[in-house]
Length: 288
Image (tube, rainbow, N blue to C red):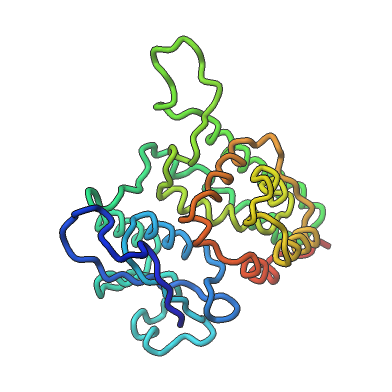
């Protein structure tokens, strides 16, 4: 078990002059291959992002599932990470944890992370399932079917990201809005919907090298997207199992991801590429 610090570095309240004590919060997440670093788990990253965005002080404890400590088994018997302890109370269901944190860490001291538009919560909700089916398929004759299904899901997400939100449309203007220029699903700020979707899109980005290359070009060689040993490993994993290219015309998705990779709340909660590659080395199936 390894402890990390999350939230604000100086330990002060997130709202200037706000009264009250800080909550005692610990997020337990899956450990990586070394038993200490953060492992591949989009649900863990989802909660990590939420707590970071709330601006609350919290601890992160990585749990090695191969050597789960006895005290942890007593804390949450039969439960694997992620889960949270909040002022001594154990919370184990990810969806319920999200609701609980949004209720307990509320304005004016903490920002509201819920979406303004309900449609944002379901945008892209089938992309990861379609990707998983695509990468796990072993039959060549079925590959095209799974690929088209994934592309349809991505196109639907792209259309949503490129469709202007009501506040982007000027009711008094006679001109039609060409498209949306917003940064994220629900506007220019990260929300709970982004915390759910972005960790899953990151996994796809790591495993499909064409997406990495496209992002690298858009970033002008940003260090995060510069190929190294891990990126080369992702190249091998993806090319070994699938030859898939993300359509360049999906400008909404590119804009969304580029804006996400510019935010510490996202990039600093991502697992290392090697962790994702390792997790999928037994999941991705070679076609026959």
